[in-house]
Length: 154
Image (cartoon, rainbow, N blue to C red; front, side):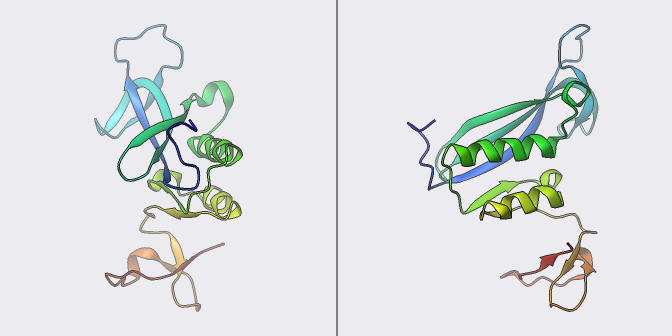
C-alpha cells in the first residue's frame, strides 16, 4: 500500500457492492441482500471496500465480505474495522467519504474520535441542530448553497 498511497494526503472512501450470484447453490458467502443496481433483493456476495483516492487515482486498500450470519458484523462494523486498520497503517485523512448507509452515529463518532472529518449524505429525517436552539428534521431546514454547520443529535 505504501508504494501507491500517501498516508497524509488523499481520502478514504467506503463503498459496498453485491457480486451477483443468481445461479449459485453451494457457494460460500452467498445470501439474499439488497442490490442498488437492480433495486431489489438478489442472491450474491456482499463486498465492502475501503478505497483511497488523491483525486486522480482510486486504489482499493482494504475489503471485507459481508456475511452477518457468519460473523454477526454489520456493514457499519466492517466500515469501522477498516478505518481502524487504516489509522494503524498511518493514514491521516482530512475527510472520509461514504454514502448514507454508513452514516450511523457510532461510525460518525468513531471518525470524529480519530480527529478526522466525514463527507456523507444524511437521511432527510435525521435530527440536527443548525442554530444551537433545538433539534429539527434535516428535511425542514433551508440550506444555502454555501452550506451550514449543524450538529447531529447526540
